[in-house]
Length: 414
Image 1 (cartoon, rainbow, N blue to C red):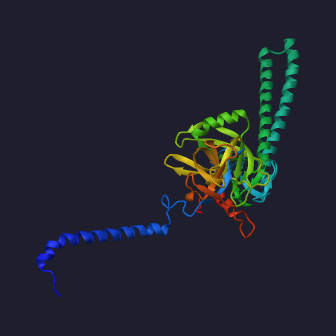
Image 2 (image 1 turned 180 degrees about the vertical axis):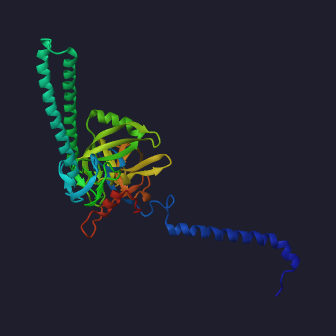
Image 3 (image 1 turned 180 degrees about the horizontal axis):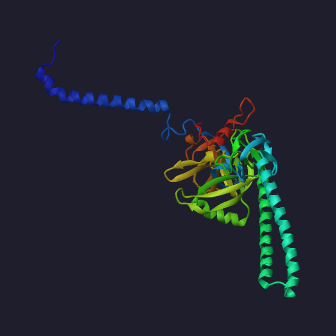
């Protein structure tokens, strides 16, 4: 067999190179076409592949959505009394049980009254003595007045008798005050509740020496019903609070700690006259009847002030989508040109005024009754067909799965 020489191969090398390049190009084209054939035409980035996008839908509807200001507050008693003794003496008896309700006037403590009884008896004796002296002085004044009129005594002597009567009158007033003060000190030996409320921890024991106006309280009484909840709101809310409060009483609800607890209802009763410059907040207080004593002094609670209850257009919060141009929703429209007519998704920008729980208040962009996509937005392409699914009911007979997703405001890829 005759092979070409080396010189012949070098002359024909450009022709062989062109042929090799043509074969390589055909092979690359075949490889690039293979994924397209397997994918069956994926469209724009693969969205919408496989026919209409399955979605869950809801409606834009008008309903009353309260305009609410939320805050964190602390429960405080409207009345609180730290009980201290006003006299010094031995504690003879404790007439209360700690942690129990008491009424105003109930006896709480008894201090040894004997020293104060003796003081009262001495003051009463002094009063009687001065009273006898005053009667004698008044009788002398009456007798010497007649003698003075007949010039039987000197004017100086009659003046001295009158001065003595006036001095004894003053001493009589002082003795009456001394008796009243001694009786008051004796009454302080019986310490009574100044307000209705519930007693706290006892800090004394029977037999203790109690000193007047000691620093530590013997016991503290807090009023539980009614009760305050104190909270602060940003100063930006001041104008709205003043405007709505001028129109009427503002309702306040407080959710105490504990799962499943219904909120307590009350009303706003106090707005501070200054804004705290350090925190930029305004101090407010709301009053609650608290008949069941669910609110406890010192407890933290979530506070909601209802400024108004307007009727507004709302959609489920799960229907809202975000983009660089703002928020939008997909509105379901009917394509009458298709055979048969099909449902398509329309991209609709919306302006959201506020949100409350699972509802979003729409300021503009939607009309009452329009159908919107609430779940499955990831496969929706504007202008392309969609198929509306029915929410699947869970096996336990609870809420449909679609409704649960909308209630939590989560997106779910269909």
